[in-house]
Image (spheres, rainbow, N blue to C red):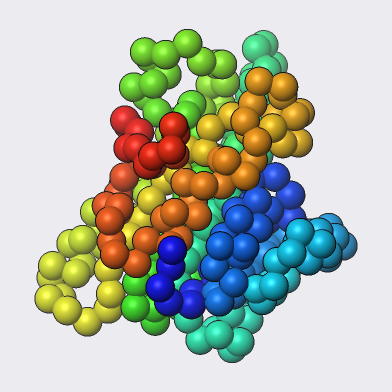
Length: 258
């Protein structure tokens, strides 16, 4: 359980995993404030009503945010600055999946560019936009939502669904997380104090029964997938090391191999 109220922002949170991250976290810690980001204000308002119907009493703020729109990203950061003055947890959840065409070369290039733009580049831009606000937190965290397909080790050693373009975008997101954590560690060591250390994580929620997977029958319920993120949000004791990939399976937090 979190011991201090937090300002938590989650992208792509009007449905699917993002929605359930906010619902589970808000029911568990109603003292914190949750900023629900949605491409569509109409869909975001519907999500707010659904949260209220589920018994959520925590403050939920709604922001319109298309993660590929730099102007909207800048406006969102300005809003959080003016309204809250800091950000404690940034969750990069928004993402897309595409099947890779086989023979159409322009379509292959377009597919990779679209996936990398949303799943990787937009996460990097959002982190840069909110980093000044994260530094105003006593214990800032960035949680990037990855996939089991992003693990090179698991892809080579386990029987998994193959999605080269999507999986590659998540492998790249894992790499971004590691490099940002390393740079952050170097900064803190060089400064010997000053700004707090941001902990960067990637989370693999598993195959979830959401619109993202067309509600695949063998997938697990999305609230179970949200658990790994919620536990990282609440980790005030710095139990979970930054620069690592985590999952929650069989009732425990586990590191995922790169």
